[in-house]
Image (cartoon, rainbow, N blue to C red):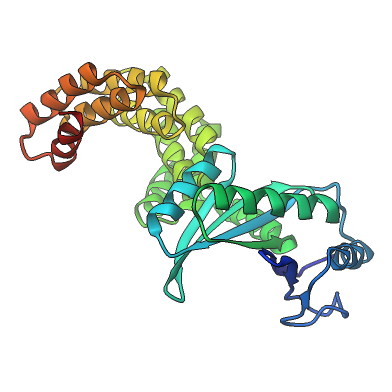
Amino acid sequence: MINSIIKNLSLHKSGISFGFWAISVMPLVSLGQKCNHASEVQTLFTHLKNNGFNEEEPVDYHYYFIDSDPKDIAHLKEVLINQDYQYIGIAKVKGKFQLEVRKKEAHTAGSAIERGKELKALANANNVEIFDGFELKMDNNANEEVDLTEEINKIPPPQLFKKAMEFYTRNDTEKALVAFDRCISLGINPEMSYYKRGNCKTALGNVNGAIADLESVVRFNPKHYEANFNLGGLYLDKENYDMAINYYQKAVTSNPQSDNGFYRLAEAYQKKGQKKMALQYCEKSLAVNPDNAYAKELLKKLD
């Protein structure tokens, strides 16, 4: 059974260069070794298979990108989320910003190289300086998930929702997600459990899962302001402006004093190219709150 982490397979401008960090299951690969030919990747996967790795079984691949501009990194994050990568985090590394995302998928040596080429091209297309390779994470993650599920399953049902909310409040998102999963399966406070689980999925970059949960919320309660507002934002990020407008309209209908709701509605119309409607909702936002800086800024762009 493999219990190692293989880190930092990188594609660079000069060609394909791979740096590995591994433990003794791969005796020919040492700390900091650089491989300058794709044949080395095949060697890596040969070692993995010799130690029980199944190329057909999906595992977690964590992908890394680096840029000096946080706006470019943030934009790439949204692009990747829309392609079903799960957002892990953005860290400051040696004065630059490192984006980490992950996707559970199966790779051979050849497909791993191709994925790297695709992500390098995607980084270049979105003005991000470096695709910094991937980290392959296997058994440890699976064991952690099992342990976490076992931990949550030990919580007595009468205390489960309260504990889920505690995890959520302290930003222990993984635990909160599993706890709300169990709440939903047991029928405990389903409207709020779906809402909170949807927010957990948003935080973890699972956009499609978040949309599904929040749409469950509005089926329970069509006037749920926060769920409608958050759905508007998720669809706006996916550039589905009609759906964004639909949910923002529902949000401001349920809360007509939401200056941010009117502002986001104006933004959705502006991105759709409907300037007149954008102006109308900008003015409504400022009528509710004359100090809404976002609405003021958008109004300047529209004038």
